[in-house]
Image (cartoon, rainbow, N blue to C red; front, side, top):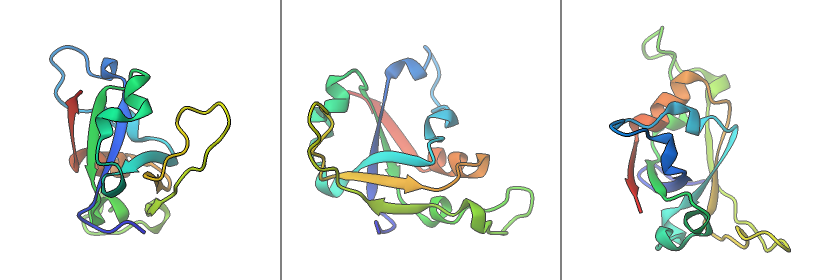
Amino acid sequence: MIGNGEKLYRYADPKILPEGQEELPVSIFNDQEMSCDWEKLQSQPENSPHVHSGRTLLISIEVCDEIRYPQNPKRTGEFVAAWEQEILHDPLSHEEGNIFTPNDSHSLIRGKKKAAVTTAIRNNSSFKKL
């Protein structure tokens, strides 16, 4: 498990942000097994193969209970167990022909990505173009 306060990196194509748009689209956080890199083990995200393949928008996600235990926006304070997110370290070993492996920093935010979840991830994210 990756604890609260830790940071995860997600890489995206900068085209997801049209000129003048300053808020990340929640659609980039929809994957049920959302792949990230753990900052603790990825000290130089600018050297990631994701960046070299064109995903030069670096998104930093701060792990927190708001992401881990999403609440129903229609019922303030009501945790929805079916939306719970598991945030875990998931290192990838070498796969022949896969430029993204090995990756010791690979991590997952695993769980159903309902609107409350993707909004919580976006609310706890910042980004910069590399």
